[in-house]
Length: 201
Length: 295
Image 1: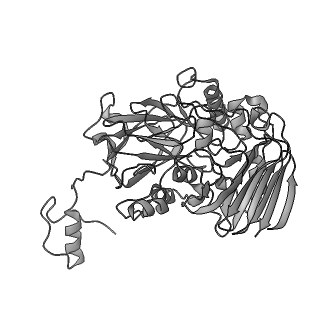
Image 2 (image 1 turned 60 degrees about the vertical axis):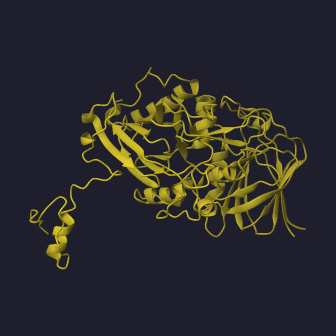
């Protein structure tokens, strides 16, 4: 493998880039328990994008782990998880937003930074807008669903240095928000940097 | 042009010829009054099977949607939309948008996360991405619904049933949503993950595996109250996780009647603290838009 990019994404910041078909993107949780919100778009037609429901339905499980095929809203495989040090990632919880924070925690959180802000700002650089935001992946986030249906973001199971690596099957535009949420345990109440490594075979 | 009054026979007897425009017109007009199992009733107040508790005079939408069909409407704030599985095998896939501002739309992730509950039921609010309530579930005699699997894709139905196009015998929900959305100026980018009613899915708490629960049987009904003016898209087609080898989906009845949004202090505003704040966001928005500040 040849490394073509190796970047540290600051705490609370976005990142974007195109991962070419046949190459890999690795996301490293440098300090542990840092949620990394992530969306993928088919670079050739960004109206086709990652679909959490398609992904979960085809694999008949809510958790993403090694072997999970990340699918678009047409069912097309976009990427596959080829290595995973954690064993469980979320794709039902979506992204935090200023607006949903007012419901979840109260209107005092309205002015806090949020993942939707990162997605909008970074997406705008590629001509994407609000219509292009859909249910995303939350790498390293732990969201169990109990038998009663009660679900929630609980303490993480990641640790410093753990990584997830994805192999792209198409050229995919990748949007990342290094989650700034401080009102729940998704980032251990302390957002930290993550590392992104792009490599070709 | 000016339409002349009907000249030829109406009802069952068809004219002999369609060889001239006049004859073709007679032929076409002779079809008026035909009824079909799946059709809208206009005006809705004439729907012949109004359920108990509903005054036919209040109906603004009455339709029977075939398995594999779709429907769509704009409804006023306060409208109650009653979805009914009258034969036991309907599956109503639903998307909601704020009327006139469709970039505000249902957010399934927020709908389950904010309310700490993955399974839809009475009192569950269908939330927009702007922290507001699009609709509230005000009654539910099924309890078998799904906010995880979304709807079916053409690729998945092609693989499972050999076809997934809208005109096929196993239409994919996404294909139907593309058509329904187009009629409101919406494109593929406007189609987020959807909800579905009348086919249950449950998550194994340990493994995260999705388990099929399916239908509770007929009759079953869900009532949604529009808490703001909405564009409603409904696709009635087999659930993507339905394990049966053949595509199957039966009639969905859709009725709607006029009403008012949930007033302050009333259930389900008070069902959770998150719900109370969501309705506060609705109230703030409505008051700010109202001429003269009237609520």
